[in-house]
Amino acid sequence: VKDQMHQEAKKILSGLPGIASVDINMTSNVTKGASIVKQDLIPQVKNTIAVSSGKGGVGKSTVSATLAVALAQTGAKVGLLDADIYGPNIPMMMGVNRQPEQRNDKLIPAESHGVQLMSMGFLVNEEEPIIWRGPMIHGAMQQFLRDVAWGELDYLIVDLPPGTGDAQLSIVQLVPLTGAIIVTTPQAVSLHDSKKGLAMFQ
Image (cartoon, rainbow, N blue to C red):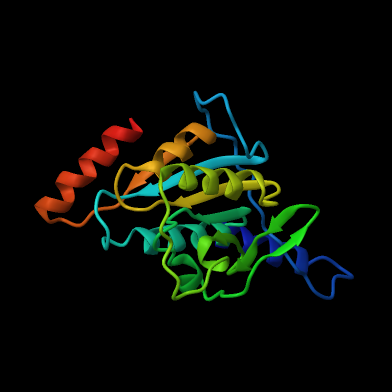
């Protein structure tokens, strides 16, 4: 009913005497999700949503980017963390390729379509492969959460790499997850792998 409320409010206010023009700014009041995780590196974020898949190439990053933009269009404050260290696609999808600024020992997220963004793709050369072992992935996840100035967010969408590896484990240990979205295609192999991802989050 957002559009209807907007139109009715504009109509009523425009009809008042002395009103030359009406500018309406609609926001949303999002509640904080419940979680059993005690550690929280981003206490100002109300809801953290993990987007995961069992296999690569099923559209996980597309779902993450589309969901983040759609939530921002409702008036919510939204961040999008590209946690796919080995294959960061979010910068390309969101049309941003500049390095983030640093202020007071914190990285300032880029912004596109009303969404704050952070990705390893901002920090390394596009042609440079990232060849890291597990502990380095965990360290990067910590830095993307603790050392980025996310500020107050209604939603942080986390685009995870395929599978059930280090990035997934780090996220579920470091922040309270409100929920997880498992992306799959209808093929049996993809569905089979997505069930493993679902079991991990459960």
